[in-house]
Length: 128
Image 1 (cartoon, rainbow, N blue to C red):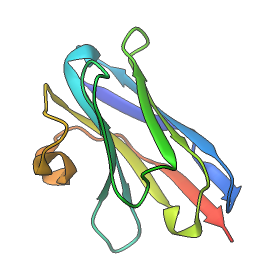
Image 2 (image 1 turned 180 degrees about the vertical axis):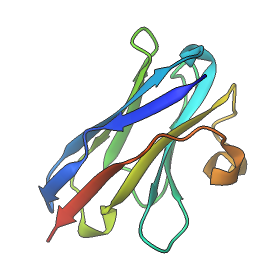
Image 3 (image 1 turned 45 degrees about the horizontal axis):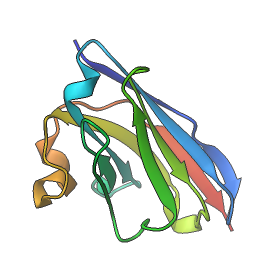
């Protein structure tokens, strides 16, 4: 059974950086397109970024484009989200997810209902 575990969240001042990690187990990581979503209380999960199964393609939400970099290491069954120039509005619980051979640059990638796997989330808090 596939399991996802996020880590790396924390409290940081505006303008700072964090690196989130997602550890994948229980399946073939290299065939999964992976993504990050984030959620604030009372709101739905919003798309942040996605990366293709072979890391050949990435897709970022406009709200984070230019400030975050998504990468993966298939040998380590892990995905990483480097976040720089953090803003208070980036405060949220960040979740990793994935789907088998999903196409990255398509509207379905940004819809959380198209994913069946979720980690427990990691809290990111950016103070002003």
